[in-house]
Each structure stands twice: as structure tokens, then as C-alpha cells.
Amino acid sequence: SFVNDITIHIALNQFFANKLIRSGIPNENIRICGNFVINFTDKLTLKKPYFLFLGRLSPEKGLFTLLKAAQQTNYQIKIAGAGPLEIEIKQYITENNLKNITFVGYAEGALRIKLIQNALAVVVPSLWYESFALAAAEAQALGTLVIASKIGGLPEVVSHGKGGYLFQPGNVNELIDLLSRIANSPNLSMRLANSALYDAKEKFNPENHLKLLVDIYKEAILKFQN
Image (cartoon, rainbow, N blue to C red; front, side, top):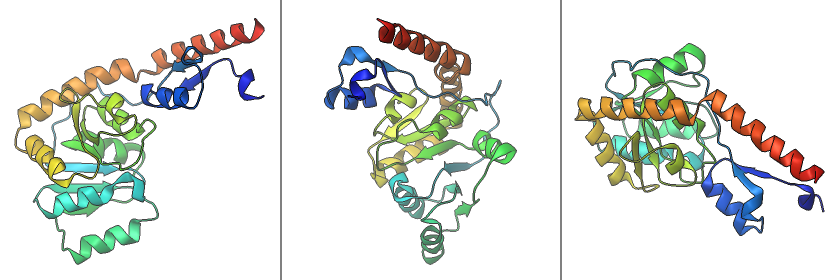
């Protein structure tokens, strides 16, 4: 069959490599190669007092976990993105009089970079598996720590206690605790952001990614020829 002709399967992380193994693909035929990011910063930007959600406004992204956390705190939160839940999210913000939430809309280019660099943290509250969560990698490469759900491939992108924090998906109280920890400790925030940037330069480096990918292709071709 076609599947039997595939010499090497590429997984974005160990989480999905394990899924491939469970589906019957031999471990020796799997190689891990994550994504990369292009925009890196050389130095940390002085943070402004807000948290940022950046991504598609759809149910699996868990945005209502963040909105419920916002209801119980005074922390400023900016939402940048577009998607099927946009109207519902705006209604929720209005109906609950959430004055601490600013809806930015879809952001790209220089605006996107500025939003990320100035944020205390980028929040990725996903309820379903993230294959890689490029927004989390991008944030770290721009010197901003990430608070993310402990689900799917996210724990391999965000190092808990080192370049950010992980919390149980949908756990509003746990998210509030982490937001408070960051908001109330500027030194901690900058230390984690610096660590995130350091890790990102190694983990999400385009040159490293290209070398690894080319090596995997070479191995696949050699296996096929043999």
C-alpha cells in the first residue's frame, strides 16, 4: 500500500510521534522535526501591563477560559485574531461589561510583532490538541513568555517554570493564579522572558530546522533506494 512505501514519517513533536506509534507506525520510521520562526529579537522589550491572546477565534482555542479569568480580575487583556466566534466573544465582553478587555482584531506584520513584544505574556488556553502552536514559539522568539494549556504539543514548545507556565486546559482558577504571578512580579516576568528567548533561538532556529529536515530527506531517500 501507499503507507508501506513511506520510508520516514515526520512528526512535529514527541506527542504526535506517540500518536503515530499507536496507529501502528514503527518507532524506527519516525523522526521529529518541529516548526521554526523567522522573527527573533536581540533584546527584551520593556513590558506593558497587558496579556495577549493571539490566534483564531474558534472553540478549540479555549478563549472563554481566558474571558472567565478576565471577569474575576482587573488585568488588561488584548485579543488579536479573527474567526467564527468573533461575534459571540464581542457579545460576551459587552454583556459582562469587561472593560479590561480590548479587541484588536486580526493583527499582522509590525503591529503583530509590537503586540507580542510589549505583552507581559501571550496566553494560549487551548482546549484541544495543538500540533505546534506557532504563536507560542513566535512569542518566545520575540522575548515574551507564554502561559499555555498543558495539552498536545504545547508542553514541548513551552518549558514550564523556565520560559513560561502550563496549566490544565479549561482551569480558570489555575490560569488566574498564573496571570497574578506574572502581573505582580516584573522581575519574574523578565527572567522568564529572557529564558524563553534563549531557548527559542535554539529550538526554533530556521537554520537548525533546515539542516534537520534535509538530513531526514536524505535518510528517507537512502532507505527508499535500498
